[in-house]
Image 1 (cartoon, protein in one colour):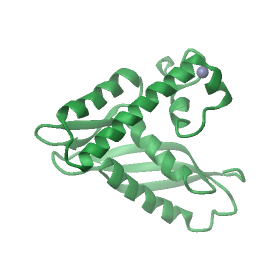
Image 2 (cartoon, helix red, strand yellow; image 1 turned 90 degrees about the vertical axis):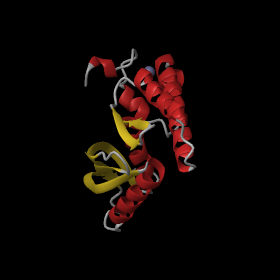
Image 3 (cartoon, helix red, strand yellow; image 1 turned 180 degrees about the vertical axis):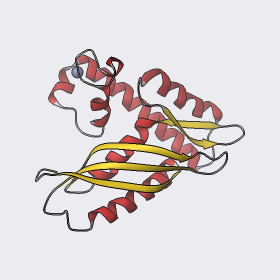
Image 4 (cartoon, protein in one colour; image 1 turned 30 degrees about the vertical axis):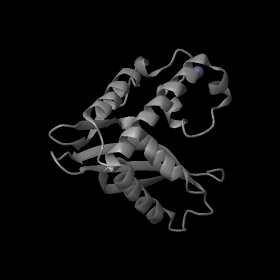
Length: 184
Ligand SMILES: [Zn+2]
């Protein structure tokens, strides 16, 4: 990790982003750097959401797409843009963080499962149609559920969410059981 990814308080912006869907930690409630980073990331997420909604209604404007991309470039220092939507007039990319946080949100919504590290890989980015992507997610799982078939449910949920929310087709979902923990 380069020093660009570390906030002035010493926390990494990855940590701030990863925790965005959860209540702020004690540190994040009092640290001005983390408060500001959370505010910016929330704004980015809202813009992305607007773009997604507009896209569903086939109303996305190149201006909106460009706003999202510009915002991501200027406010997120890490997380390269991943192209997801391309027509002759529109070229929409989401920050890598958008995909990583979507993975985390889907995984964490399962009782007894938490996402630890995620990686995405773009297989194919056709000029028209859906981007194809593979993902790898390492998990912390509560031992009480780890034989329950949660992994197949999780795989289906990730494939569905990526298709419906991000317009991306997942070609492979690699779930790696990294740790067992009763508080997962
Ligand atoms: Zn901080």
